[in-house]
Length: 106
Image 1 (cartoon, helix red, strand yellow):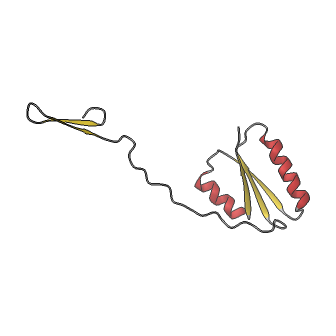
Image 2 (tube, rainbow, N blue to C red):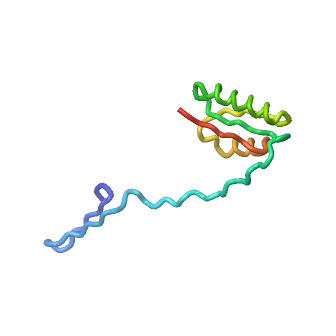
Image 3 (tube, helix red, strand yellow):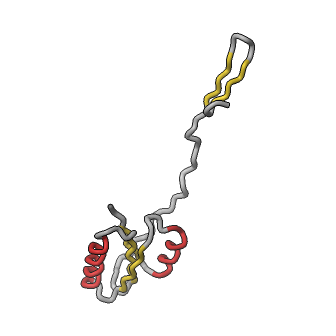
């Protein structure tokens, strides 16, 4: 086998060459439809998740301030972590809040 191909010698004047596709076939990830929107934020727990890039705290502080002005009975919970929050953190957040704002950026 040479570089994903196999070479088989037949009779002296013929050669069979089999070329393999190196991309393979990868099944798509499972599809989950979006959760229904929260219709009212008053009295809700709102999560803010971001990955901690420089300057992002200024943006999310402003968002939090606006949410508190508009929905004074809402509670804001802040989360920080990597771009891919992973199943464990996603499960934790989903148990603690009614809705979440997720932000990344460079």
